[in-house]
Image (tube, rainbow, N blue to C red; front, side, top):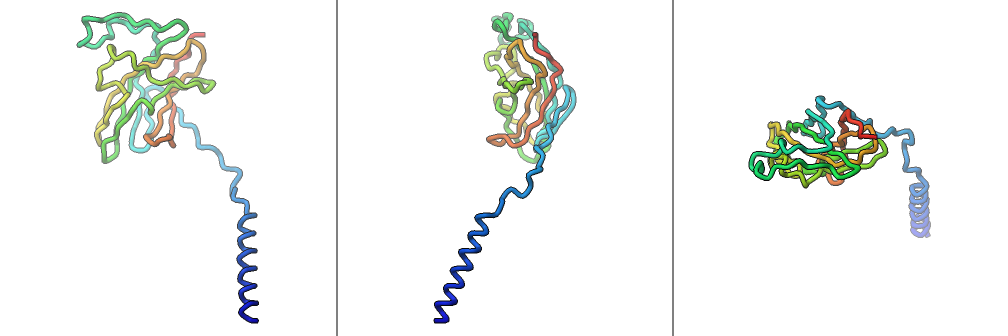
Length: 187
């Protein structure tokens, strides 16, 4: 009889303990603030993980001039007009790898975002105007080195407060920073 009573107490204790665990509120802090939005200006630097980012120039262009064509394509140089209702945002920058291993950057690490949250990826049909080693669709940044990059983004003529969103190399990204480009689209 004592064994049955002990077994009964053990089962009852386990059931009550399990029930109390089920009723526990797992939200321990409802006042957790979202991470602070890091915003820098063109010319300033920000670091995400071991990569230090800097946008050095930002400009809006309705036409990419033929004079921007890279040397090996000069024989087919031509102005590239933005489609109706759009403009190009031309950016140049540097990425410094402060880590101990090479890092590979791709175009998913760069996108322009506007005030209402619309995002715009780097334009890939402008290879006549950017050297392959500068085009951030796939750049390897050696450890301890700084690598320049250049890109064009095609964005609508509406909107304001354009920012370049930079992300870490995780998929999906965990850390982000923003560069205020100081460029308002045409109204």
